[in-house]
Length: 193
Image (cartoon, rainbow, N blue to C red; front, side, top):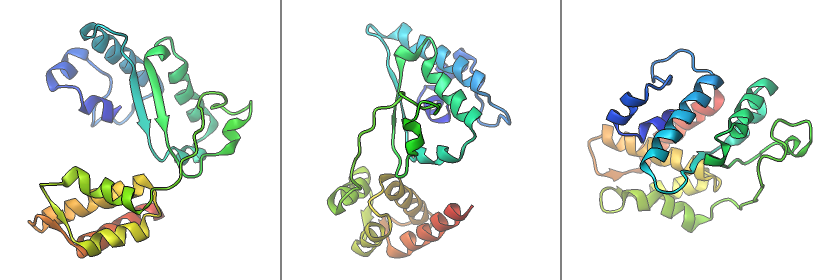
Protein backbone atom coordinates (compact mmCIF):
# COMPACT_ATOMS: atom_id res chain seq x y z
CA UNK A 1 0.00 0.00 0.00
CA UNK A 2 2.92 2.31 0.69
CA UNK A 3 3.94 2.29 -2.98
CA UNK A 4 0.38 3.04 -4.12
CA UNK A 5 -0.09 5.88 -1.65
CA UNK A 6 3.27 7.46 -2.55
CA UNK A 7 2.13 8.13 -6.13
CA UNK A 8 -1.02 9.94 -5.04
CA UNK A 9 -0.68 13.73 -4.63
CA UNK A 10 -0.64 14.70 -0.93
CA UNK A 11 -3.90 16.68 -1.13
CA UNK A 12 -5.69 13.66 -2.65
CA UNK A 13 -4.29 11.34 0.04
CA UNK A 14 -5.70 13.59 2.76
CA UNK A 15 -9.17 13.66 1.16
CA UNK A 16 -9.36 9.87 0.95
CA UNK A 17 -8.93 9.28 4.70
CA UNK A 18 -7.05 6.03 4.14
CA UNK A 19 -6.42 3.59 6.98
CA UNK A 20 -2.80 3.30 5.79
CA UNK A 21 -0.30 5.52 7.61
CA UNK A 22 3.47 5.16 7.23
CA UNK A 23 3.84 5.08 11.01
CA UNK A 24 0.94 2.66 11.65
CA UNK A 25 1.87 -0.35 13.73
CA UNK A 26 -1.00 -2.48 12.47
CA UNK A 27 -2.47 -2.54 9.00
CA UNK A 28 -4.76 -5.47 8.25
CA UNK A 29 -5.91 -7.13 5.05
CA UNK A 30 -9.33 -5.62 5.74
CA UNK A 31 -7.71 -2.14 5.89
CA UNK A 32 -5.96 -2.78 2.59
CA UNK A 33 -9.18 -3.91 0.87
CA UNK A 34 -10.97 -0.80 2.18
CA UNK A 35 -8.15 1.50 1.03
CA UNK A 36 -8.00 -0.11 -2.42
CA UNK A 37 -11.75 0.36 -2.79
CA UNK A 38 -11.40 4.07 -1.89
CA UNK A 39 -8.42 4.63 -4.20
CA UNK A 40 -10.04 2.88 -7.16
CA UNK A 41 -13.30 4.81 -6.67
CA UNK A 42 -11.33 8.08 -6.45
CA UNK A 43 -9.37 7.31 -9.62
CA UNK A 44 -12.55 6.25 -11.41
CA UNK A 45 -14.16 9.62 -10.63
CA UNK A 46 -11.35 11.30 -12.59
CA UNK A 47 -11.31 8.87 -15.53
CA UNK A 48 -13.48 8.47 -18.60
CA UNK A 49 -12.55 4.78 -19.01
CA UNK A 50 -12.59 1.94 -16.51
CA UNK A 51 -9.67 2.26 -14.12
CA UNK A 52 -7.30 -0.70 -13.89
CA UNK A 53 -4.77 -0.58 -11.06
CA UNK A 54 -1.89 -2.98 -11.69
CA UNK A 55 0.30 -3.94 -8.74
CA UNK A 56 3.87 -4.94 -9.50
CA UNK A 57 4.97 -7.59 -6.99
CA UNK A 58 8.65 -8.35 -7.42
CA UNK A 59 10.45 -11.16 -5.59
CA UNK A 60 7.03 -12.68 -4.83
CA UNK A 61 8.72 -15.99 -4.05
CA UNK A 62 9.28 -14.75 -0.49
CA UNK A 63 5.57 -15.51 0.00
CA UNK A 64 6.44 -19.21 -0.14
CA UNK A 65 7.41 -18.80 3.52
CA UNK A 66 4.19 -17.00 4.55
CA UNK A 67 1.58 -18.97 6.42
CA UNK A 68 -1.49 -20.16 4.52
CA UNK A 69 -3.82 -17.61 6.19
CA UNK A 70 -1.69 -14.65 5.07
CA UNK A 71 -1.59 -16.00 1.52
CA UNK A 72 -5.37 -16.48 1.53
CA UNK A 73 -5.89 -12.91 2.77
CA UNK A 74 -3.81 -11.56 -0.10
CA UNK A 75 -5.66 -13.74 -2.61
CA UNK A 76 -8.99 -12.46 -1.24
CA UNK A 77 -7.93 -8.93 -2.24
CA UNK A 78 -7.78 -10.06 -5.86
CA UNK A 79 -11.15 -11.81 -5.54
CA UNK A 80 -13.04 -8.79 -4.14
CA UNK A 81 -15.87 -7.07 -5.98
CA UNK A 82 -13.38 -4.46 -7.23
CA UNK A 83 -11.18 -7.20 -8.76
CA UNK A 84 -12.12 -6.10 -12.28
CA UNK A 85 -10.17 -2.91 -11.48
CA UNK A 86 -7.18 -4.68 -9.92
CA UNK A 87 -4.48 -6.83 -11.41
CA UNK A 88 -0.96 -7.87 -10.60
CA UNK A 89 2.25 -8.67 -12.35
CA UNK A 90 4.30 -10.90 -10.11
CA UNK A 91 7.92 -11.92 -10.50
CA UNK A 92 10.11 -14.30 -8.61
CA UNK A 93 12.99 -16.67 -9.07
CA UNK A 94 11.64 -19.68 -7.19
CA UNK A 95 7.87 -19.34 -7.18
CA UNK A 96 6.45 -22.39 -5.45
CA UNK A 97 4.98 -24.92 -7.84
CA UNK A 98 2.55 -25.74 -5.02
CA UNK A 99 0.64 -22.76 -6.41
CA UNK A 100 -0.41 -25.02 -9.30
CA UNK A 101 -2.34 -27.34 -6.98
CA UNK A 102 -6.02 -27.01 -6.21
CA UNK A 103 -5.43 -26.69 -2.45
CA UNK A 104 -3.13 -23.69 -2.94
CA UNK A 105 -4.55 -20.26 -2.08
CA UNK A 106 -3.02 -19.07 -5.37
CA UNK A 107 -4.49 -21.81 -7.57
CA UNK A 108 -5.72 -20.44 -10.89
CA UNK A 109 -5.00 -16.82 -9.94
CA UNK A 110 -1.89 -16.22 -12.05
CA UNK A 111 -0.77 -17.15 -15.53
CA UNK A 112 2.86 -18.16 -15.45
CA UNK A 113 5.24 -16.80 -18.04
CA UNK A 114 8.77 -17.99 -17.59
CA UNK A 115 11.39 -15.36 -18.31
CA UNK A 116 15.10 -15.86 -18.51
CA UNK A 117 17.37 -13.86 -16.21
CA UNK A 118 18.58 -10.56 -17.64
CA UNK A 119 21.55 -10.76 -19.93
CA UNK A 120 24.49 -8.40 -19.68
CA UNK A 121 23.04 -5.75 -22.02
CA UNK A 122 19.65 -5.66 -20.25
CA UNK A 123 21.34 -5.48 -16.84
CA UNK A 124 23.52 -2.58 -17.98
CA UNK A 125 20.51 -0.76 -19.45
CA UNK A 126 18.56 -1.20 -16.19
CA UNK A 127 21.45 0.39 -14.29
CA UNK A 128 22.41 3.14 -16.70
CA UNK A 129 19.19 4.35 -18.33
CA UNK A 130 17.47 5.74 -15.20
CA UNK A 131 20.49 7.93 -14.33
CA UNK A 132 21.62 8.79 -17.86
CA UNK A 133 22.68 12.43 -18.13
CA UNK A 134 22.60 12.87 -14.34
CA UNK A 135 25.12 10.39 -12.87
CA UNK A 136 27.88 8.24 -14.31
CA UNK A 137 28.93 4.68 -13.60
CA UNK A 138 32.57 3.55 -13.47
CA UNK A 139 32.93 0.50 -15.70
CA UNK A 140 34.35 -1.60 -12.82
CA UNK A 141 31.23 -0.83 -10.76
CA UNK A 142 28.95 -2.01 -13.56
CA UNK A 143 30.98 -5.18 -14.08
CA UNK A 144 30.79 -6.01 -10.37
CA UNK A 145 26.99 -5.78 -10.40
CA UNK A 146 26.63 -7.85 -13.55
CA UNK A 147 28.88 -10.52 -12.00
CA UNK A 148 27.01 -10.64 -8.67
CA UNK A 149 23.33 -10.01 -9.51
CA UNK A 150 22.88 -13.28 -11.45
CA UNK A 151 20.58 -11.57 -13.94
CA UNK A 152 17.89 -10.94 -11.32
CA UNK A 153 16.23 -7.58 -12.10
CA UNK A 154 15.28 -6.92 -8.48
CA UNK A 155 18.84 -7.59 -7.31
CA UNK A 156 20.21 -5.35 -10.06
CA UNK A 157 17.88 -2.58 -8.87
CA UNK A 158 18.99 -3.16 -5.25
CA UNK A 159 22.62 -2.73 -6.26
CA UNK A 160 21.75 0.40 -8.22
CA UNK A 161 19.78 2.03 -5.41
CA UNK A 162 22.31 1.19 -2.69
CA UNK A 163 25.19 2.34 -4.89
CA UNK A 164 23.53 5.66 -5.78
CA UNK A 165 22.84 6.31 -2.08
CA UNK A 166 26.50 5.67 -1.27
CA UNK A 167 27.56 7.99 -4.10
CA UNK A 168 25.33 10.70 -2.57
CA UNK A 169 26.96 10.16 0.82
CA UNK A 170 30.31 10.78 -0.88
CA UNK A 171 28.93 13.96 -2.48
CA UNK A 172 29.90 12.74 -5.97
CA UNK A 173 28.22 12.31 -9.34
CA UNK A 174 30.03 9.11 -10.38
CA UNK A 175 29.17 5.70 -8.93
CA UNK A 176 32.43 3.95 -8.12
CA UNK A 177 33.42 0.36 -7.41
CA UNK A 178 33.69 1.17 -3.68
CA UNK A 179 30.02 2.26 -3.73
CA UNK A 180 29.00 -1.03 -5.31
CA UNK A 181 31.15 -3.09 -2.93
CA UNK A 182 29.49 -1.31 0.00
CA UNK A 183 26.09 -2.00 -1.57
CA UNK A 184 27.09 -5.65 -1.94
CA UNK A 185 27.89 -5.91 1.77
CA UNK A 186 24.55 -4.28 2.70
CA UNK A 187 22.63 -6.62 0.37
CA UNK A 188 24.44 -9.65 1.85
CA UNK A 189 23.50 -8.52 5.37
CA UNK A 190 19.85 -8.09 4.34
CA UNK A 191 19.83 -11.55 2.78
CA UNK A 192 21.11 -13.08 6.02
CA UNK A 193 18.28 -11.63 8.14
